[in-house]
Image (cartoon, rainbow, N blue to C red; front, side, top):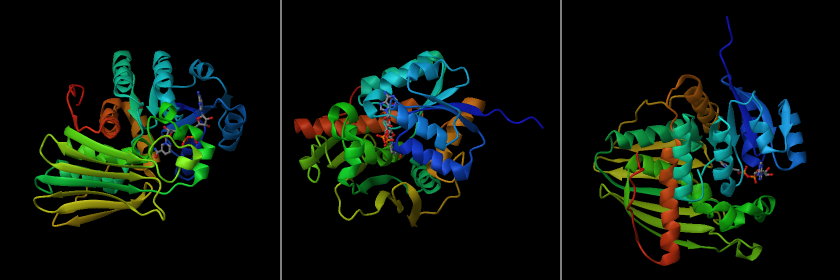
Amino acid sequence: MAEKKRLQVGIAGCGWIARNLMLINMIDRMREISFVAAMDVNEQVATRFSKRFHIKKAYMNFESMLEDPAVDAVYVAVPHHLHRSMVTKALDAGKHVLCEKPIAISIPDGIAMAELADKKGLKLGINYMYRYDKNMYRMVNSVRSGNIGTPYYAIVQIPWFRKPSYFEKSPWHKKWETSGGGTLITQTSHAIDLMAWAMGKPATISGEIGTFRFGNIGLEVEDVGIGSVRFESGALGVILGSQATKPQKPDQIGFYGEKGSIECTYWYSFIARLHCRYVKRTSLKPPTRGLASITSSFRGFARWVLDGSPYLCTAWDALKPLYIVTALYESAKSGKKIHCTSLDWWR
Ligand SMILES: NC(=O)c1ccc[n+]([C@@H]2O[C@H](COP(=O)([O-])OP(=O)(O)OC[C@H]3O[C@@H](n4cnc5c(N)ncnc54)[C@H](O)[C@@H]3O)[C@@H](O)[C@H]2O)c1
């Protein structure tokens, strides 16, 4: 029997997340994907990565990898400020793209990327991979299908702890210019994505941010951020994101409504537990499954390109958490509540 076509992927940025993807794939062995090239500006990193994970070609130059006809799609896993330029180059070269979250560091950048992908007829997915976690998928789709009745409020709590070495290894995390923000855009935006997916359009947003634990090592961005959202439906949302909580506590995302509540608790992105109170547990499943949500998401992206099955987080979807996060920052900096207008791109 002829072997099914695999999506041939080139990796751009061989850092922490790309390494973790490849380590999980050593066990999961995604049959839909072949990793055919790896690229990093750091020559040693690119060479070591490609050897370690048996990837045939290592590049130090992004344009050279884009010229490689063996590459059908590019996985962009680089610092946030580079997402727009690298995704644009990849789309211009005719490649499909799976870009790491956040889509970009500003809404105009993100809209330009989504529009370019549509214009070129290419797929641009953003790896908000919690959407592919079985229990988080069940939770959000329970809310969307009315299982909790009218939603009253949602809570997102991401109380992480990071060591100074996290910022020393990847100093781009420290700066507004390179990261576009701190813990809200980096860790919390996964959960904010789920909140927006379940609750819909926001109407007003207020935020506060602070830099506590890591100010003394030059952290410009926030290590704690909080906020509130009123959605168009009238429901409320509360957000807490931190990378300064010692000891780290489990994450929690919950939705509370007329009939009951549904929550997920988890550590990092692993093994989310679902808690349903007065709400029936559904047997819904995300469209693709893997050993971890990252490989489920990659499988979903490959299926999208190979046979057109919908991917759960398009570029347009990924603009929603970015909008909420950037509005939290704008509110925190201006001291004003943000009224959410000009959301005609919200689909
Ligand atoms: N989905 C998730 O849960 C998850 C988890 C961690 C990180 N991320 C995201 O992945 C992305 C990368 O984060 P990370 O933690 O791997 O960062 P990292 O600092 O560990 O790695 C970034 C890599 O990009 C390389 N790089 C820098 N400039 C480059 C360029 N111009 N061309 C090619 N390579 C370049 C660096 O040399 C480095 O190896 C970010 O968008 C981050 O938010 C996602």
